[in-house]
Length: 413
Image (cartoon, rainbow, N blue to C red; front, side):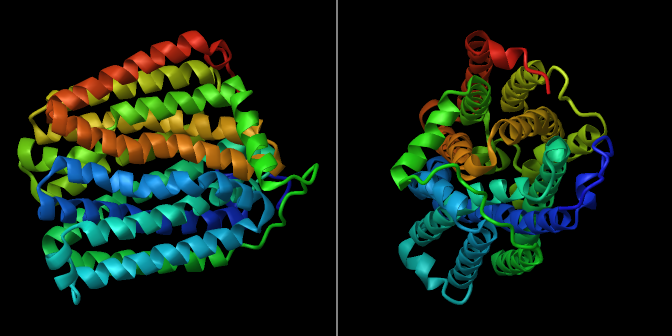
């Protein structure tokens, strides 16, 4: 690893060659998955015209992800993490090719079976993501020195959010102007480019473990570590419940169709709006981090995220809705970077895979199960009331964590 890097340099981590390749690869892979996510969402909505069917997309990925992610965390601590990342990337690529085929040359599959084949493919990508998530997070920590963890988290967030802007926007625009086949071709190309970029990073040895453990002892050790650390546990809990209830991404196709009447192209801009806010905030945080009074800032920003979702729900203007989603991205980015840095700083090297897998469970609960909750709540309560309810629950979660986790409230990094 390169040394003599200035920890106060906003670009310090990007001067490390392997980390730079990692972020390029992460951008390309995330672009591919985010573009695919939007195309799949709009495709399924066109087939079913059901908000609940959109929620089932998240459920289809969450079930396999939760089933294997703890084991995958153990794998990331005993197997070369780069190898796990590359294999997972290949699975994603194969799934993208299959989506391309059944949407074009083999379109009779969807004509006969509806959205079921798409759900099956998403189930498979959930398995791949279950292995990739802990390996990727743990591998990133091996690429930079400890004093640059915060800086690296900021640039990682920027790469991720840039992909979240360009991926969905490209998905909506390409789908709207050129059709589903062209959209899936771009998805496969970007996935392959991500694989090549990950391949450029040097292998890193598996961190030496202090003792030899069985798989079950290893898994219990990771769970015990997280649940005994109030700062990590409260940060993960805050994010999980806030995004679980407060997120509205899964039902954006319904907002685009029924409320704002903007179609697939407008949906791409709605999906991109939060990530635009996150990109701008990532750039700002690279130069002016929010680590002083980090715990307080985390609580404030999750509260602001909840308020943004409530006001988005009652908006009937496309531009106002985009602006409110943009604001939600500003708040979310601060919480993402603080949480990621907390995990990197407070986790021992030999446990990063397992802790990352538990973090993945919390994130998966908020994202995939949150998508299902959004779709189900919209079906039961109505679209707008369900999002208002979710935002209100986010505010209550912030109040509860502030009261029950005093160490997080006073945390400074």
